[in-house]
Length: 155
Image (tube, rainbow, N blue to C red; front, side, top):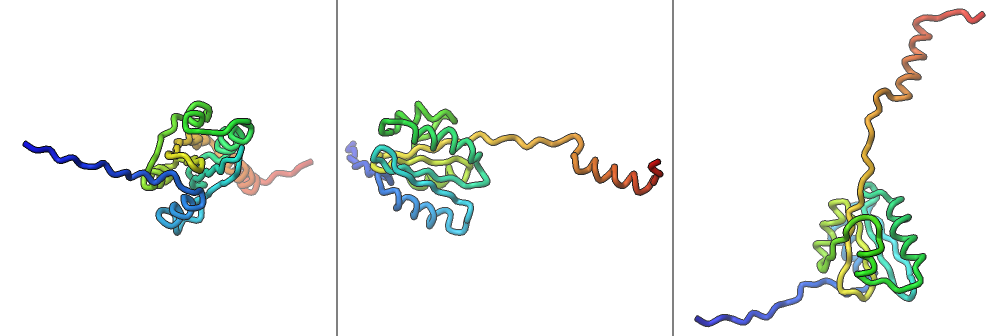
């Protein structure tokens, strides 16, 4: 029995330029979604790209625990440093544009540093919405209605 030697073809999207990644994500996944947000900045000679969907992530966590952490470092960043020093969640390494787009749709955010052969996506923990036992505005409305139904003289 003969075995075929199949040459493995690379399906990796990376490395690429930050501008190309942004354009391909917008055109391929988020063309009609105005809440798709990207942040680009340079740090220690590296172009850093961060993308997320506004209403699906806690932006405060991204700014505090990702952007500020990257900008305060005096060293260049790589995949291992990102995985070890971004204190949000375990990152998932991604090599295809499709995987990055699908993770963003699920509520993750992506970090890519130009020139690297992978990006990394992080699931951002969402704050739980609380259901108040009794809404404050409801109390005000009920109290005002009570006064209207039961007027009293103030003396």
